[in-house]
Each structure stands twice: as C-alpha cells, then as structure tokens.
Image (cartoon, rainbow, N blue to C red):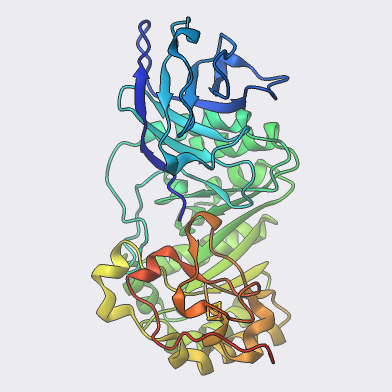
Length: 391
Ligand code: SF4
C-alpha cells in the first residue's frame, strides 16, 4: 500500500515569509522545461539545484551539500515512504506541520480528490466516516491542484463525504476541470440526494462536460432497507428522484451497490427494479465490501463470505445483462467468484491500496484478478485459494 500522506523532515524551514500549506507540482532537476517554479517543488538530484522553486524535496538516501541551498526556500527531506514521487505529481505541502499529502500521481490511472468529509448519509459500511467539520480548505486546495495536473490524465475522481454538499463550489471545481483538462473524464461519487433538487441538477447539466459520470448507490428496491443501510430517513426517495432528474437532463449515471449481509439477499429484486424503472442508467457496479471505517465497527451485521451470495450475485448480473444494461462486478477475487461472473469482473481497486496476500502465491490468474483492498488484512474470506494453470 502506498502511503499518500505523512511526515517529512525539515532540513531548513522557510525564513520569510511564513509558508502556509500550499499545493505544488513536483519538478525534476533535469527535466523541468516549461515548469513554473512559483508553483513547483523541486525533487533534488544534485548538489547544485537551480534557485527559484517554492520548496526543495530531498529524496530519501540523498545527502546533497547544504551550502548549495543559498536561497530562502524550505528544504525538506522525504522519508522512503515517498520514494515513488515523480515529476508531474501534485502534493499538498504543509511546511508548518512538516507534512505532505499526495493529491495526484501522474502515473496513476486512479486519481481522485477527497472534496469533503461531511455527509448527510451515515452508511453502515462507510469507509470514510463523515465528520461534521468545516473542511472548505479541501476544495480550496483542489482549485489550486487542477491547473497543475497533466492534461493527458485519463480520468479524475471526486469523492467524499458527500461532494454535492459543497453546492456551487463543486460545480465551479468541475467547470475548472473542464477548462484545464478538456480530455479528462470525470467521475463523481455521490449519494444522489442533492440531485432531487432540479435546480441543482440543472446546474450540474449546464457544466456540459464531454465525459462526466456520477456514481450513486442504491442498496435495495425497498425504500426502508435502503434508508436503513444509509441510516437516513427519506434517502431512497431523494436518491431515486435525483437519478431520474439527472437522466431527464441527459446526464451519465452509474448505480453502485455495495454487497454485504444486509443487501446480498435482495440483489435479484434490486436488479429487477433497476431493469424495470432505471433501464436508462449507464452502468451498474456490484461491489465487494472494503474493511474500512464503519465496516469494522459493524462487522457482525455486514460480513458474509462472498461464496455465500454467489447465486444471488449471478442472478442479479443475469437480469441486468439480459436487460442490456452495462454491468460490472467490482472488488471481488476470482477464486471466490462463480466462473460465469468472470467476464463481468473488473480490476477496480485503486492501485495505491491494492494488494495480494500469501494465499495468492502461484495463482495462475493473478494478472487478471483484482486482488484485495489492503484493509482485507483485517478480514477476508478463508476460502481464498490459488487457482491452477488449467483455468
Ligand atoms: S488466489 Fe489471489 S490472485 Fe488468485 S484468484 Fe484468489 S485472490 Fe485472486
């Protein structure tokens, strides 16, 4: 698992003016053509780095002579956790706290911005438990980061908390993406409730992005079950009305279903409901559980071995596929999955938290298998088993 946030070691702090947290793109010493030093941190490679950058980062294992740093900018030593940093990555550099957070990795295909930790749902299995805090600085930093990221980026995600709680600020951030990243797809994870307000849905549609999708969870065809899973009365009605509004406005919508003990039995009925009432959505993702946040606290109510819901999962996929809906199975290990579901299985776990465990050694399908969230070390099926080459 890659560490995306952590301490750095101050070698020399900025003398003046006081440096608050700021967002910087990493530049490399021998490949900095076109870089703007004012918005860049230089990854030092020699004893004689060029002047003018906003910060200097010394990789773990390098000990340049400090006399070379004649300018006033902060010099920080990275720990080996950040050996993966490369030119073009974007960091939040918090010099007063001696921390960096990696906001974007140029080589990754799975970059996403955490927009807020606030949420109006309180899902039983939330991997990022909501915090009722004023975290508007998160989106302020995203505004700084977007112009710094590579226009060749294939996709950027926005996640929370509930991103739509930001209202117009979210709309502005998405507009900024469209302006600076005209070829980059955008994927937003939302509980969908805010889109029940047609005025907000219209603002969303007015962004007129060429490739923007919103992923919205629906956990059951029964409103009280959905509301129980998200711990919010009335959420089902708002979410479904939100999806209908978005589709009325021609927006792309994905339905996401996290599978656990409370939802697995109802999968075929939910698939029927989607096929009958929401046939126009663009994708349905049926997803395995991540062992983070509230999932651990509510494990007894949530955990079920994936092998025990294969019949329901297969039936749901069959119904959706027969209705010509695009359907995928996320976050599932091939050795636990009904072989008929393999064509629908997607390697969906973000690269920075994707792992394989000891049970996978010698498995013939490891290249095709999505593996695990790193949090699966906390709990995973005891039926994981390496598959043979005959497959
Ligand atoms: S043993 Fe590991 S790599 Fe092989 S199918 Fe199972 S989870 Fe995937």
